[in-house]
Amino acid sequence: MQTRILVVDDDQELLAVLKVQLSERGFEVAAATTGTEAFEKVDAFCPHLVLLDLILPGTDGIVLCEKLKQHPKTSSVPIILMTGISSQMVRYNAFESGADAYLAKPFDPGSLLEKIEVLLYKADTPTASDRN
Image (tube, rainbow, N blue to C red; front, side, top):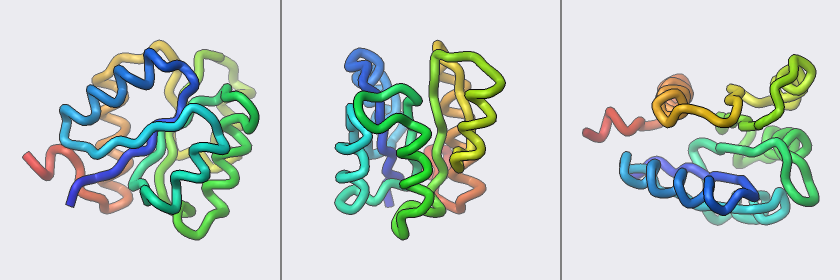
């Protein structure tokens, strides 16, 4: 079974890089650039993990995180909230909304992959290292 990751970010460049990096690691990746688009993809894609940007057009990452944690299909899906804003209040709000991890941009790809592997392991979802 291939692990599915939904990446939600309005930065097209970062989205493209993440899609390539994660695909090369054996993950199936879907992308969305808005909160609305992401929420619509949840039913069809059924992600095992969500990488979610904080600042999005329309629905922001905090609101989307709360919605995903309330949605029956994604309530137990790990969410990594990514943001370029480094503030204790933002970090607090991220975890209050249900995020399982927080990652400050710019980030090292190794740090991201490590967080993904740990969260998937905790969620008992096959990780990239399990497939190799």
